[in-house]
Length: 338
Image (cartoon, rainbow, N blue to C red):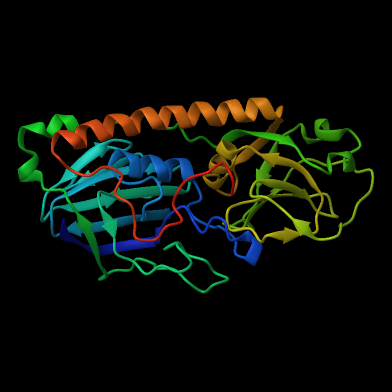
């Protein structure tokens, strides 16, 4: 292992991120973590990290870095390209960056969140098992011009030699559009709608008053049996709430643990990731499916990522390098629970 460094030359809204503080709801701590966790996990998998290792999240903006060491990187999420020394490369594949090179990731035209993973461990402060930002804990590391990040890495382009092609992994890039369909299951308060979940048919628009905590939607007049709040209770990430005025709110990964609005539906895990990429103005429709459909979708995605992880592990083993480098903090095992 050696210590690599990168210099931040220009950054918009960019943070060090991971999958969040899972398992702490009982003491009132929300998980938070990467908004689009599928993209974050994929980026880490492509470079041989544990899928919950620290990485860089770029939100609706650009990032320029200078590498002071050889790096193995992958960019996933909304960005369509990444430039290394002004040469454009595809995202969603493994890339070698030589010492002295400049990395530029442009702001996405569609979608909001881009992820940059680097083989190794990004050195960043952690609290409660996570490096991820949390506004309620007043914690997180934002990247600003002039900042230097250190990464403990085993990667060395010279030592890789003729094995370079073994490390060229890629994955189909998602096609982000301004009209999306989100899968959801029936919520506990669906009977608040006169037509049940069928009342959610139609097209909604993401409002500007949206952030990592929740997404506000407008566009469909919902016919309610009774309007008003309920007693506060625990709510999951992806809960689709209905306000007394009839607006919908989708709770995202920064949501508070309790809320007092009726929950008429709950997004699937993949749909939560999709929703996190939806910028204001995006058109959204909700499709309510059975639980077995939602579970089958999740299993298929996990199997696909698992196959890629196995290929990466085999390539790393040819060089005698460790695969699935894990951070020192211990909360990064992925589970089906938020």
